[in-house]
Each structure stands twice: as C-alpha cells, then as structure tokens.
Image (cartoon, rainbow, N blue to C red):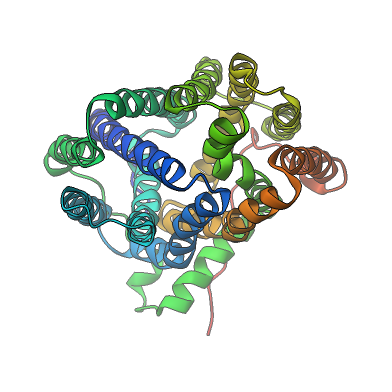
Length: 420
C-alpha cells in the first residue's frame, strides 16, 4: 500500500523533523563528552577503537530485526520506545557518574545500548520521509535535512567543549534528557502514516521471508548493489579517521578539547556548505559520476591529513572542511535514490539491509585501527587507507556497469514474490 503525501503531512513532517534535530543535538553532546572522557582517561587508540567497535557491533546485529519491524509495526511507536529507552539509559549513567562508580567497560556498555536504540531509530525515521514528503520535494528535503544535521553536528561539539569547561560530565549528560523531552512533543502530537506490507494481506510471513523480501527489493533497483559495495568498503577505510580523531588531535598534534572541537567544527562547516549547494537544485542529474568523483576527492583530503606537520590545526581544519564539503553530495544523492526507487512498504527493510551491509566490516575496521596505529603510526595508516579509497572508487566507477545507469530517468523496480 502506497501512501500519497499531502501538504498537510509535509507540514507535520517538518514539525516532527525539528523535534528530531533537538534530539540529535543532545546525542551529539553526549557523544563528544563520552569520547573525550575516554581519550583523557586512557590516551589509548586501542580504547577508542574498542569504543567504536562496541558502537558498530550491536547496530550490525540488531539492524536486520529493526528493518523488518519498521515495515510491520507503527514507526511512530518504534521511535517513541527507543528514544525513551535511550533517555532512561542516560539517566542511569548520570547516577553512576554521580557516585563515581564508572569504568571503561561500563562506558562501552552504554555505547552499545545507544547503538541498539539507533539501530531501530534510523530505519524508522528514514522510512517516514517518503510517506509524508511529496516525491518532488524529497531530494530538496534531504539536502535541507543534511544541512541542518550538519549545523547540529557543528553546534554539538562546540557546546560539549564549552560545557566541559564549567560542568562535570554527569551534569552535561542532562542535555540528552532535556532534548529528548523537547523531541517528544511533536512525536506525540502528529500522526505518522502506517504503510502495511502487501504480503500481509495474503499471509503472515516469518522473519526470514520478510528479510528475503528486503533483499529482493534491493536487488530489483539497477545499480544499487554496486553502490552498496562502494558503501561497505568506504565505511571500512574511513574507520581509522572516525575512530582515532581524538588521538590524532590530542596525542599526535598536542591539542586539547578546544582543538578537537575546532577541527570537528571545520568538518561540519564544510558539510553545511555542501548541503547548501545540493539544496539549491531541485533535481540532480548525473548522480552516479558526481558521487564517485567527489568520493575520490575526499580520499585526497584524507591523504593530506596524514602529511600535516604537528600542531597545524588550522591546516587540519581546512582539510577537513574541504572533505566535509563533498560528503553531502554522496549521502544526499544516495538517500534520494533509495527513497524514490524502493517501494514504500519495503523501504524499512531495504534501509536496514543497506545500513547493515554498509557497516558489516566496520566493527573490524574500528577494532583493528587502534592496534595498527600503534604498530605503524596513525599518519601512515591514514595515508594507506586514503590511497586505497581513491583507487577503489575510481576502479568501481570505470570498470563496472554503474556508470551507465541514469537515475534521473524513471526506473520502476520489479519486486517478484518470494515463494517458499
């Protein structure tokens, strides 16, 4: 069953979306202070790697289940439950910090729980967009969404670094609870459409069959498998950058929380600029060459980070700004392809499968990044990953059929029935 969005549902979506931005702000502040707490306490790249590992692994395990439930249950209820549980987990962590009974492994547990909640939250929110936003507005709303997410991610580290100077970590964590309560208001008020799977009208499917339907829907969209392969390997190769940035700033370049927040701000400013550029066009043609060329460009920036002399934080920031500038092109165009080419009643499963497979080797990438950095040095690790990413992205574009697919032309996926 397809839901036809209207102007009314679009206005309600904007209200819901604003609430989610507040929730994201709280999550960004929590993420900043938790990661910085681990860096200050241990100064160990291996600990940072384990922190990233315990974030990716639960999400990887729970995302397939979340995708099926997103297409079977009311998405509004899913978001309400997991957001409430996340706020409750933060409250418990606050109590542990107040009584000074925290440990590294307790923080890893907290990171893992938040990962499980995000595994359900992400496909539910992403699946809501095409049911409430008219198709002719999806590409632009994705650009605007990316723009404001980048703004929140810009404010989050800066706010976290500022609060770190004046408050204890247990006091800072209250930001997550407050922003949850703000996001709760529109979530309760608005009505979110419930899209029922076609197959539910015929029979009750088991989990395995439901999951297979998602795979079939994914393969039915031409070129989507190749884009998924790209996403898997790029996620793997960028794990050292995402995982070890606090170590890179603090231990390698001698920076403190201010410098760490500063380079993250430069990255987000770049993302904001890229999101503004993508939002100026209603429809992007030639999506595929744009995605692959900007990916290779991001790899060049990744390589430059490996060569910057110690303490040149402005140069680090400018490099991250240029990398951030091209990231929205990849994410927004990819999201638009998914949301416009996959049937609404199967979108939750496809998004969860896409996210799961994109992240499938990310836990490995994150857990080995720290030990390898200690063995060969973080700069050499960055350089190897960057060069590999450039070669891989260009090879995938020039030596597969992906460059011949034009998503600006209407492509109607054919999803066959799954027969036991």
